[in-house]
Image (cartoon, rainbow, N blue to C red; front, side, top):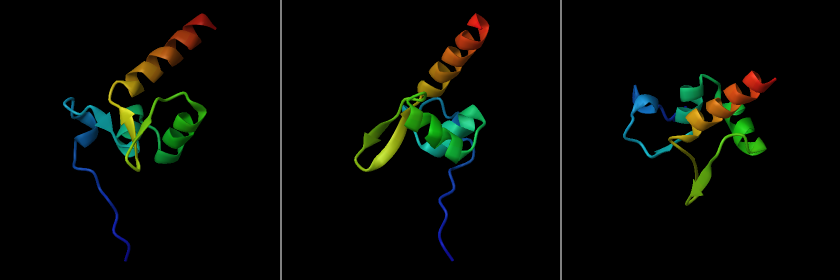
Length: 75
Protein backbone atom coordinates (compact mmCIF):
# COMPACT_ATOMS: atom_id res chain seq x y z
CA UNK A 1 0.00 0.00 0.00
CA UNK A 2 1.48 3.40 -0.96
CA UNK A 3 2.21 5.88 1.78
CA UNK A 4 0.27 9.12 1.46
CA UNK A 5 1.56 12.34 2.97
CA UNK A 6 -1.13 13.98 5.05
CA UNK A 7 -0.51 17.51 6.29
CA UNK A 8 -1.10 18.19 9.93
CA UNK A 9 -4.59 19.49 10.62
CA UNK A 10 -4.61 23.25 10.32
CA UNK A 11 -1.18 23.39 8.64
CA UNK A 12 -2.62 25.44 5.75
CA UNK A 13 -3.96 27.93 8.28
CA UNK A 14 -0.65 28.34 10.18
CA UNK A 15 0.18 32.05 9.83
CA UNK A 16 3.82 31.46 10.84
CA UNK A 17 4.62 29.57 7.63
CA UNK A 18 6.67 31.49 5.08
CA UNK A 19 6.34 28.89 2.32
CA UNK A 20 3.44 26.56 1.64
CA UNK A 21 3.29 23.21 -0.10
CA UNK A 22 1.10 23.17 -3.20
CA UNK A 23 -1.48 21.23 -1.19
CA UNK A 24 -1.51 23.88 1.56
CA UNK A 25 -1.85 26.66 -1.01
CA UNK A 26 -4.68 24.76 -2.70
CA UNK A 27 -6.45 24.43 0.63
CA UNK A 28 -6.14 28.17 1.28
CA UNK A 29 -7.69 28.81 -2.14
CA UNK A 30 -10.35 26.11 -1.69
CA UNK A 31 -9.30 24.42 -4.92
CA UNK A 32 -7.84 21.03 -5.71
CA UNK A 33 -4.17 20.19 -6.09
CA UNK A 34 -4.48 19.87 -9.88
CA UNK A 35 -6.10 23.31 -10.18
CA UNK A 36 -3.39 24.78 -7.98
CA UNK A 37 -0.68 23.29 -10.21
CA UNK A 38 -2.51 24.72 -13.25
CA UNK A 39 -2.50 28.19 -11.64
CA UNK A 40 1.22 27.82 -10.95
CA UNK A 41 1.89 26.60 -14.49
CA UNK A 42 0.04 29.55 -16.01
CA UNK A 43 1.95 32.02 -13.84
CA UNK A 44 -1.21 33.16 -12.05
CA UNK A 45 0.04 31.84 -8.71
CA UNK A 46 3.62 32.54 -7.69
CA UNK A 47 5.81 29.61 -6.73
CA UNK A 48 9.47 28.71 -6.50
CA UNK A 49 11.66 25.67 -6.23
CA UNK A 50 13.48 24.97 -2.98
CA UNK A 51 15.86 22.16 -3.78
CA UNK A 52 13.60 19.77 -5.66
CA UNK A 53 10.44 20.93 -3.90
CA UNK A 54 7.80 23.29 -5.30
CA UNK A 55 6.74 25.86 -2.71
CA UNK A 56 4.26 28.76 -2.77
CA UNK A 57 5.05 31.93 -0.78
CA UNK A 58 2.52 32.27 2.02
CA UNK A 59 1.29 35.63 0.71
CA UNK A 60 0.84 34.39 -2.89
CA UNK A 61 -2.68 32.93 -2.49
CA UNK A 62 -3.97 36.25 -1.08
CA UNK A 63 -2.20 38.18 -3.86
CA UNK A 64 -3.78 35.91 -6.48
CA UNK A 65 -7.24 36.50 -4.99
CA UNK A 66 -6.68 40.26 -4.84
CA UNK A 67 -5.74 40.31 -8.55
CA UNK A 68 -8.78 38.20 -9.48
CA UNK A 69 -11.11 40.45 -7.49
CA UNK A 70 -9.65 43.56 -9.14
CA UNK A 71 -10.04 41.97 -12.59
CA UNK A 72 -13.68 41.10 -11.91
CA UNK A 73 -14.43 44.57 -10.53
CA UNK A 74 -12.93 46.18 -13.62
CA UNK A 75 -14.99 44.01 -15.99
